[in-house]
Amino acid sequence: MRETLVLNASFEPLSTVALRRAVVLVMQEKAVVEQSHPGLKVRAAQVELPVPQVIRLRRFVKVPFRQRAPWSRRGVLVRDRHRCAYCGRRATTVDHIVPRSRGGGDSWLNTVASCAADNHRKADRTPVQAGMRLLAQPFEPTPADALLLALNLRDGTTLPEWLPMPSAA
Image (cartoon, rainbow, N blue to C red; front, side, top):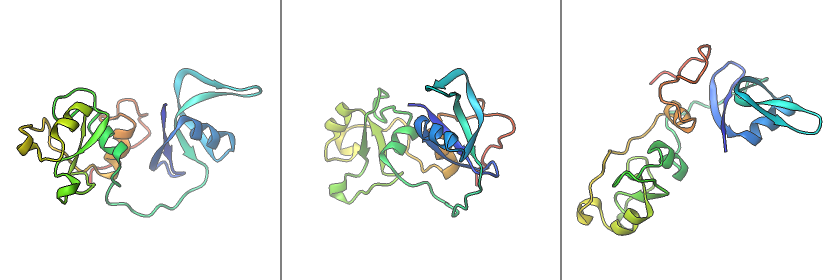
């Protein structure tokens, strides 16, 4: 399902939403389409709408400052681009570097994307104990990084030039 970038009325990136939610916001006149996917349309009985890539809320929404991106399974998979941290194949699960049974928690630095086979092979051990090495070290994305990762953007090439890239703080 396509992800749509949601901007505040001030053009500040807020989050991403599913295509269905973006269309609902536009249809309820709570948002306007700022950029659409070229050549794609959403059609209904009496309406035709371009498939939104970026929408902007009509009213300003005050958002508390968020210094850290919240951890989630989906966030870890997106951060690691659905690639296994041990073998590089397609990842479908999240593995804890220090297992939860040994005090490891759900955090950006303790979790990596993993294929089911490597997750099962590592089991309830650390990578060193299992004789496995990480191809890349986990990192904690900033909220802006998490937003760009969710949109599958790293360099901003598909974003319009009028949309400022979030500054790395």
